[in-house]
Length: 189
Ligand code: SAH
Image (cartoon, rainbow, N blue to C red; front, side, top):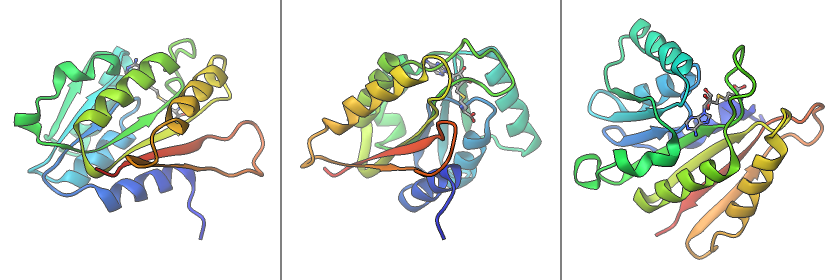
């Protein structure tokens, strides 16, 4: 049946990422996606997980330790600087990436992802993404600042050349209170 947003985000990555690849969690938050990706790529694979908040890095580190995962690099920096951390010779083409936009649940609601840096990170990832790889963005937009970011991300992704990328939007249109939705980009060449 119709999958929930987070479930569908994982299904998309599950179908496109291979074991042994390097993948990116652009916003590790509480580490749910980081843990999922860590298992998905297996022991031979690697996850680069970013967050600007120490609290998120700490929470993710704890979750990974509890699950005995050792194939993750936690990077306490903005995903705007992603280029600095990806070496194609070392990581190979990137297998896929996820963004979970908005603020860290149960934390400071003023620290939010922002359209300009999110788009900057997406552009950097598209350059190093493998053919047929996906960037999956879960867009939360009900909070203050969320609407602006949503618009910037939609503007950027809708303008991507259809000969080079497939872009989809997936979301429930009968849910109340600005439900999150997915934008996923597949790199065709
Ligand atoms: N809204 C989601 C969770 C989003 S968490 C939910 O409800 O489940 C978003 C994370 O992105 C936060 O931990 C925040 O610190 C982080 N973040 C914000 N700006 C960032 C940036 N420029 N680079 C990396 N992480 C960032």
